[in-house]
Image: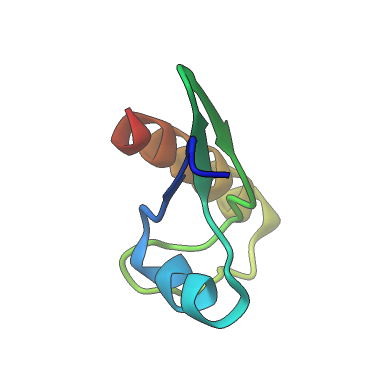
Length: 70
C-alpha cells in the first residue's frame, strides 16, 4: 500500500523493523496508528523488573512515539 507511511521512532525497534518488518507507527492519511509500545527504557534498552516502572515507561513511549510521528 503506497499510501502508508511506516514510522520507526525508537532505536530499540529499528532492529525489529529490519528483521521482522515491524513498524512502531503507521501514518494513514491524517491518522497515525501506534503499535507495541512496551515498558522499556529508550536510552538503555532495558526492561525494569518493577511492573509500575514498566507501565510508566510504556505510557512515556506512547507519548514519545506520537509526538515524533507528527
